[in-house]
Image (cartoon, rainbow, N blue to C red):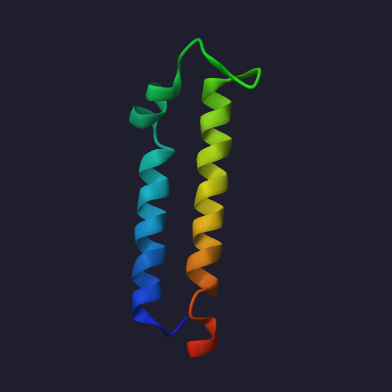
Length: 67
C-alpha cells in the first residue's frame, strides 16, 4: 500500500465506520420498524457493515495495477 491517496481513503473510511457504528448514531436506528421482517437496528448494522466492507474492498482494489 504505497499509494498515499489510497491510505488516506482507507483511513477516512475507518473514521466513517467508527462514527457510523458508534453509540450516538446507532440510536437513530433504534425504532419499532421492520425491514423485510427484520428489526431496523440489526438491518442497519449489517447493511452499514456490508457497505463498509464493500467500500474497503473497492478502495483496496482500485488502482492495484498502478503499484
